[in-house]
Image (cartoon, rainbow, N blue to C red):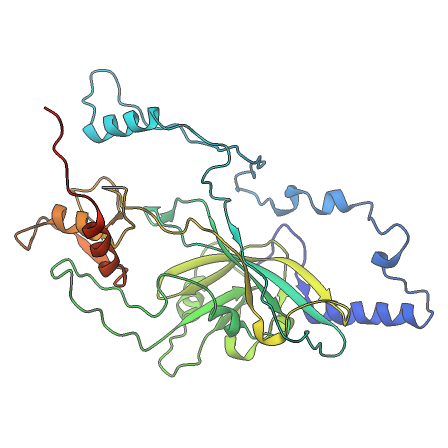
Length: 379
């Protein structure tokens, strides 16, 4: 689909034009690239980099980001005469004692990875190679009436070569759903999870679905989307293509820098990602050897949530459709989940529960054993 950023950039044509202009300058022709001119700054650089270029009708206008500044939505306040929930009172009391730090935890906090150290330098094909920076965002964790209500939060960033296959990037993407099948375990919280023998998914880039069909049992997720698009309002006249992810390299793509792209896997786990930077590597470029690509560049260090009840341990279960929880879904640690939802091993009320982290059971048990015993409060 068209976006407000202009026509997509064909990466192969872009690299060929770059090499042609560079070769023409080396042979004494007049085709001097703009970046080799005495004054390479373009007069319209301000307009081309404006946020107005990514604005679409009906979108909310991007808010100017200021480091240390946070934008808060007004919280619901109980009216006079209305009974105040104890949870609300305790949260207000806790917030009144909390001092805000400008450089504290924010959605923009991330950690840079150390660049891989290689014994040899990168060997370029045909003297030039494209290097792409891919920014991925974590799936929204909250929904209301099937609409995602969480602002996209940066998760991780990778650097890829134009010669890398799309599957090489997909195999590096970190996600809680990788290699798992989540089923309702509310009747038996410790029931073994079924094995996952498939790994279906697709990248949606410039009106093309790139399906991962490496395993025989993988499903074509794009088929359902194409069936919906045939009768959907707003996409009339759009033509979509279907390709194989394992047969497509990044150099074969046409992308728009900064434009949101779609990654779907594990049934309904959706990620947004974007190509944020494209760089042309020459034989003089100092880069690690080819086997290290794609390599991680940065990662968000706040990708896990604490338990919604105790706020001390990381969540272990996701609870849905529970009338006894304040949030739907709710993220609970193992201790709070079992003590709140079960009495003598029997399920209390109706809800669905999905166990996420099997490996954290032993860690949580060890942490509880190391904690000092409970002390009686003074009378």
